[in-house]
Image 1 (cartoon, rainbow, N blue to C red):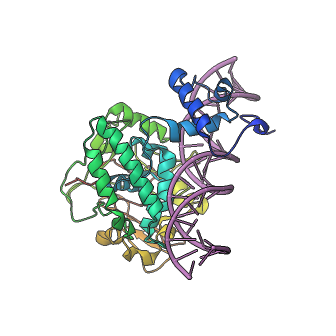
Image 2 (cartoon, rainbow, N blue to C red):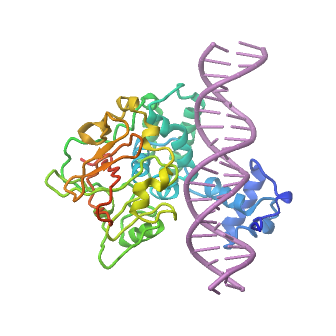
Image 3 (tube, rainbow, N blue to C red):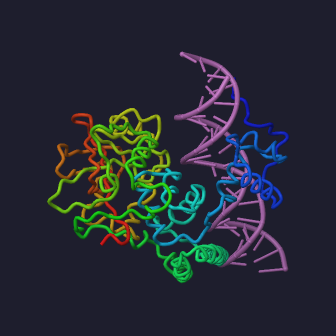
Length: 367
DNA sequence: AACCAACGCAACCGCAAGCTC
DNA sequence: CGAGCTTGCGGTTGCGTTGGT
């Protein structure tokens, strides 16, 4: 017995939206809101569209204050950093980038950032994209500047002149790795706008949203605690369990009090360690073949950020000041990125072989 | 000029969680 | 408490555009 379809597909138009449809939808929502029911909305307006389609169109295109294209270097960094830490949770990532939609970010990641990471550029960036992006940016920037955001235009100018940077087969340059960082609390970007990590409630909500178990009694997350705080060499170094680049949403952070689980399938550390029977889809290793470490990812490779064992079947992950030093045999080469992270990630299980994909990264301006 | 492959983006699809009755 | 419905999300697809040959 299947589910009832959300709409009568026979009477529903698909494909690109016409300006008239856009106008109808936009004006209705601006006047009346969504009414809390997307399914009923198209009938009210007289649109032959699926409610889901209306919602998507509104969220991804018609919603005010949206920005399209023209991702800045800083945004690149944020996306990459968050992707490393939480995986393909585009909605969460989008929440950190005001004006960006999860779809946009997802597309941007899939079409550009991932390739940037892979160091694979089969073709020069095309003019169309650059032109449109710049044009869009200028348009947006003009709008923003009229709202008093004077930084926007300069950002556009920077972007329009950074097409060469986009050709660089490397991770965004501002992700600075190693070189023992000072114990500095990294300011989160955009924390002054939109949903962010800058308050306890938001953090709690995020943790809960991420599927975690949150024990507010013991864990008092702070901005520094949740996200990026560098630790100096002498400080305790914690771990964050992250499956980098997993499209199966397997990025997880385990903690005594906090567990992030990206999917409901996660039932414990063991599952993670066992990889759900090797159920991990594109591992970081797959995304970044060994030969590519020298192709823009050296910064991950240096300083033990990535341990790559000559024996391709075994990766030894040394955990700083942790009770467990683990040897993990996944049957394939894996990577580990050390993470100096004050979000304590002690693993719950005793003697659990830890799959420590630990990470360390910084945002620009972290100095 | 024609063809083709790559690219980028909008939109669709299916699943899972949350909500309501 | 369970069934049905809605929403939100992530993955995937379709298609127009562009650049290379």
